[in-house]
Length: 232
Image (cartoon, rainbow, N blue to C red; front, side, top):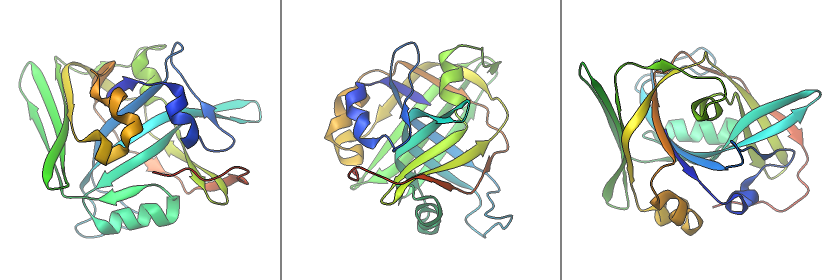
C-alpha cells in the first residue's frame, strides 16, 4: 500500500453523492494498492483459473452518514486484474472501474526483510509498485495512519442512477512499515493527468499488510444522483 497526499479538489469530482472526503489529521490521501486474492468465490462458487489473481487499484477515502453512524469507505478510480471475466463481473455487479491487463507479482522473504512487488503490462511496457519492509508484522496502532488506511469497511460507487454501497468484512491486519517503496508507471496514461503530480512524488507512507479472509457483500443502492457523472 503506497499512500500519497493529494489536493482534495482533485478528488471531489469522483466523490459519490451522499459521501464526503475523509482525511487523516487534515491530509487527504490517495493510495495505490496491490492485492493477491486466493481461493476467490462468487456466491460460494469458485471458477477454474479465476480463483487466484492479482489486483492493483487506485483508491481514496470517504465517509457516509447512516443514522447515528459514520461509515468509513473507499472509492476506486481504477482497478486492474489479469482476467477479463473478473473485470466483467466486477463492472456488472458492483459498477466498479475494472480493466484487464497482463499481471504478475512476487513476494520475497528472508529472516530480516520482506519485499512485495506487483507488475502489469500497459501500453507495451511493464509497470510496477513495490514495498520493502523489515522484521515481523506488527498490530495496527489505534489512531495511526495505518489504521486510517486499512480500517475502511465500506465501498462506494458513483452510478448514473445514484450511489451504491457495499460492505467489506475482514479482521484487523498486521503490517510491515515500508523502509523503501516506489511506483514505476506512466501515471498520465494509467490514471489521468490530474494525478501525475501527486503520484510522481515520494509516498507519504508505505506498508505491507499480512492479509486475511475477506468477504465483500452485495451492493445496495443509496441515493438518486442529482449531478453530472464524472468518469476517467
